[in-house]
Image (tube, rainbow over all chains, first blue to last red; front, side, top):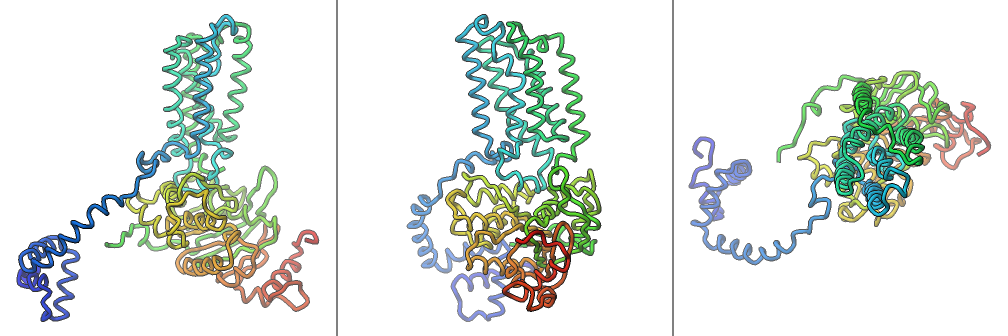
Length: 270
Length: 269
């Protein structure tokens, strides 16, 4: 052997299947080949020139197997084809998101079909838009809806990072639908509900570190209904959504976000 | 293939016990103290956690799995104290946990489920496929790996649960009633796996089957009404029993003797 690589003579002998090679030489050569790509490629060329019958046999086998191997590739499952969907979305949240979306669509349909005057001044969708994203987020982090919650709770990713991932995924589904729907039907503008809905979501996450996200969401939805429903029933636009109140919503969003950051370590245990 | 070892694998151990609890109190729900002043130190090996129903076994396991925070006292896991606001990420990567009531995603295949759990446990992305295959093979589910969870029998689901618990090669493995639903042959296989794991891992197995402990555990922890009653080898437990104590085997007699002696056996049942 020359330097660090096997000699060409040795490789040629090996390719021919030379039986006179000493066992220790053979062993050393094979263990070198296992870790040395250049020598393997020299062996491959050597097989083609030194042992043409072996080369042709291998080629025949490969040619016959190829169609079978192509056919045997397992059809990738839905989840595999779309990569790591569960990394963002909670694995079982799809039905709940679908429900949230259908509520949105129904509310939008109502806004189109029945003009506001018959339904009490403001369209229903204005009433529910600020709290819908919140509901979707709560559904993606609810122990009651996630069968593997106990398992998830003990893993390294549990806690705020996973909660934020799932919340982002839920918002990414719900917010665009509300935006497009509101724009198409003209029932409301994004300025009216987007900031309040984000403020609600961040407050729910902040409160969630104390009483649990689900309970926080229920409490906030109840509070919103108490505040907004009377005005809506009386036929007026809920005053809380008036553009004058946007700074207050912004403040709530900032407070909620700050509280979430301050209490980031408390999300990892119950 | 060269074996992949990380710095964490080769670093020297800087703690004496994987689990060290001093005066540990853990609440179940709002008020009830299910673990009430526990002192315990467990190292490498398979430890059987025995105790009557309602002794607080599940609450103890949940607090060891870092799901519940201790109400009082100290708990140190793999040298990391469980404090009020510590970051548990590094510790949790080294924990494997199979809960008693173990929920799973019905539409996932076994492989997808274990892969998802491996991802949650922050197993390096490149190692996940191999780690999952190894875990699934160790519990004997390789032929069912691509079947959906909902098509599996109860025993197979349990084994999938064990697979997800060992997929990250944990230092601390907590199994709550792992043999429930396993048939006798599977239980024998499980005991072998337990002995194998106990060589380099701290395994805590909560069970009410005394014979599982005798066959697979190097150490018995007897736990009643939130406190430690006895800790020793299965032989010590057997030696504690007298013929007059109720039970069909020496271990069962030892078990009832120790529980009676502690005055912590609740009710006639």
